[in-house]
Length: 436
Ligand code: GLC
Image (cartoon, rainbow, N blue to C red; front, top):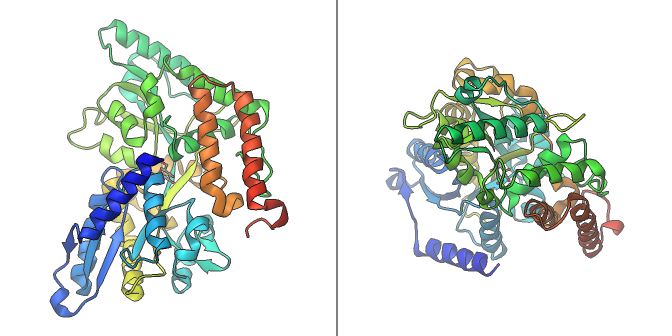
């Protein structure tokens, strides 16, 4: 916590020094100034900066790109600090799919952009950003967990991609052992996001849900993970640590897992679609050797992908809300979403782009995995509302305890139930209707 506070203070202080990057040539044309805080994963920042500067050139406004921390938790804290002080320093914010309920009081109503969104975008994503009838953010890109595998390795040892976690465990162990015996001492079977942060909540939800163990909180806020399937899925994941996954996975986020996979040192990786464009980049050692399939299912269960993704919102404290909205409109347009899908393999929120031949040629799995994207499982952000971060924090800590070998899946889920009951008590959930 102390580290986080120091980081937030440092980022805010840096920010207060002045624009990190000012772009656009239109200031002399009496444009206005808009600051946008966008993502940091892979080439996200680069793509955001390219488009924002193009918008600035076309409109005669100037735009400033505010650098934000890579970790979603740190980024959230930074936004909360700025917004709570009603700072007008950031006009447009990139917010996670699970943040609308927590940040809504600070976000402008974008209802005048609702019609366009309704006409083109996935209805569930639009609905996710409706809080008390206000449309607080426009879906920019969507995410779902997928399984990356080494096509060449599976072919070499005569395997097909796994359909269950048991298959994955078996294939990963076999290839890891064979490769190590052949002198490839750094080879691992499976990398994923095992660090204690939001990404682990996403991975744990996929394990639990693919075992038929629910999704932690039901829409009416009932705790659903105190069941043998949920416990078994976590116990199985714990069995990977130090066997098919390096112990270091307990400190891996998206980019750390990608680092291992992309240098050729893992057979399987769980990640979001952005990793595809990077794996296929000209300089990538695994270019042409990677396949993408749906995540495995648990015994008797079905594959589950956690719904992720990011939205663009306008701060209520923006001094230039009209220009800020115009930037949001530009960045979420079909043209820009298509460019980002091709360049960065990020999933559009505009349904028609999934039939676009250029998008599909760049990302063949957008077509083959369309049901995984459509049926992605939501984290309990709706039922948890303003308390989502506390709930997610409890989920990832419980999952981490199991991965580390400190608790069994069963004990961790019992403790998690109690912890969520405490959050519910403090939040007076029993006295308020769901969604309030
Ligand atoms: C990705 C997802 C986001 C999620 C995060 C967790 O960025 O899009 O929804 O919260 O990963 O690390």
